[in-house]
Length: 211
Figure 1 (tube, helix red, strand yellow):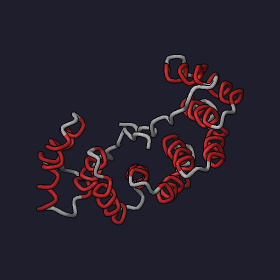
Figure 2 (tube, rainbow, N blue to C red; figure 1 turned 90 degrees about the horizontal axis):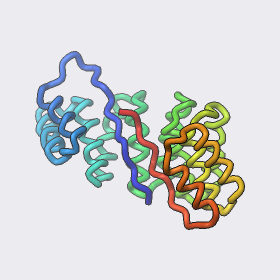
Figure 3 (tube, helix red, strand yellow; figure 1 turned 30 degrees about the vertical axis):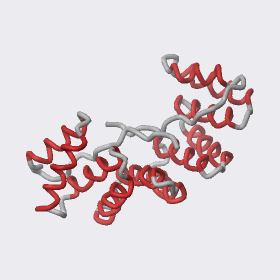
């Protein structure tokens, strides 16, 4: 299964955030996930309804290879705040980490219903379809996004990966060339372009969310 990265932290809506929660967020962003998780657990023990802490705890769990814990925490966040689209994408990633792409697809689709141009949701949806063995649905998801956002170079690149997987070499090359034109600095596109001539394929990483 492909590696997923780039977990997003939704900014707090509370007027005041505890110093411990701020420290936990900084620790998480610095890669100190054990420390960040410990501080979040302490916060949640005394204030279990603090969504910011629960959301962060869910992301820490996903980043630490504990998708079941991460999904449980993020599901609780969405029960309280169903309009939180960042958390919905991360929940989809958690379901995918658990090997349940169908539930991941549900989450990504819900995001795209509200934000049709959301790149990471469109790309993760496409990847989930491919993980189900439904490559044409994955290509269709990318095609729908590119019809609205033709300058999305990473979507062109992922489309190239899918086409290469299907040994549709000419189409893959066109997709990679489009991606390269939009972002000449993306070295992975050049690698994919070279591999389109017959080398084994590997799926690109799940699209990261903006920090």
